[in-house]
Image (cartoon, rainbow, N blue to C red; front, side, top):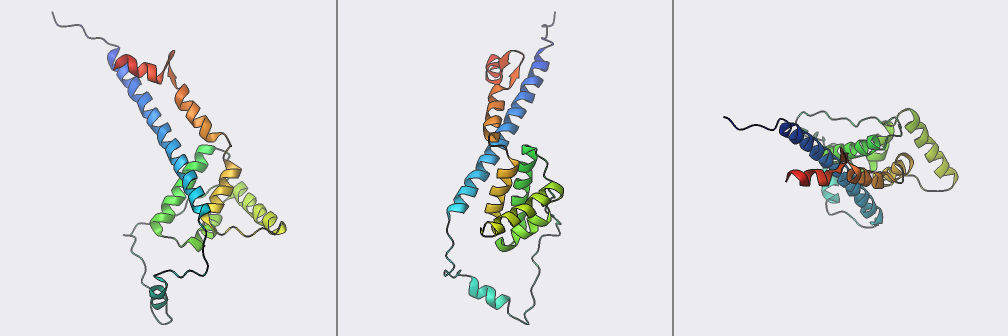
Length: 191
C-alpha cells in the first residue's frame, strides 16, 4: 500500500511562500525608504564651496567651446522619461515615484541644476498647484529658491508622506499574520 500524502502540505507551502514574498516586498520598501532618507540627510549636510573649481571644469570648457559640436550621449537607444505625479496622498505611490525619478536622473546623468526644473514639469494637478504655491510662499517669506533635488524631495516627502509612514510599514511587517499565528511563528512551525 503506497504511503498516504498530506493534501494540505502543498497548500501550506504555497501560503508560506506567499507570506515570505510579502515579507520580502515590505522589507524592500522599508529599506528603499530608509536609503532615500539617509541619502537626503547626507546630501543636505554637504556644503557647496562656490569658489572650488571642479577638476574637470577646464575639460568641459574646451568641450563646450563655441564652434565645437556637442556629441549626443549614447543611451543605447533607450527612451526613458520622468513619470508624472498628480499629488495623490498614497504614501506608497510617492515613495515609488521618488525612487523612479532618482533612478532615471542617475541613468540619464541629468545635470543637478536641471533636475528640479525637469521634475517640476512632471508635477500635475494638485501636485503642480502645491509646487507653485510653495515657490510663491518661499519667495514671499524671503527664503531661497529650491534648486536642489535633495531639497525638493524633502519638501515632497513633507507634503505627501505621513510622518508615521516608516513606522507603519515596520508595524505592518511585524503584525502580518496567517490564521492566529504571526509570520515568524507560522514559518517556525514548518522549519
